Image (tube, rainbow, N blue to C red; front, side):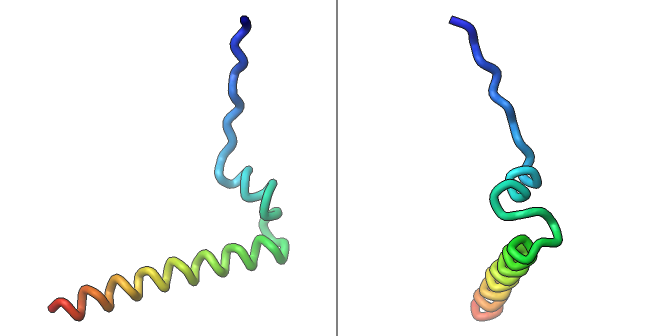
Length: 53
């Protein structure tokens, strides 16, 4: 049985394929929401660490 080599994809390639190319409305919305989620997690972490002081 011949072995089949798996093709690997970069994260950017997967985003382009499933979310849209950079500059499209869908991709911009995704990137915005992702940044807001990251900022929210950072804020929660800082708030939690300040309360424990």
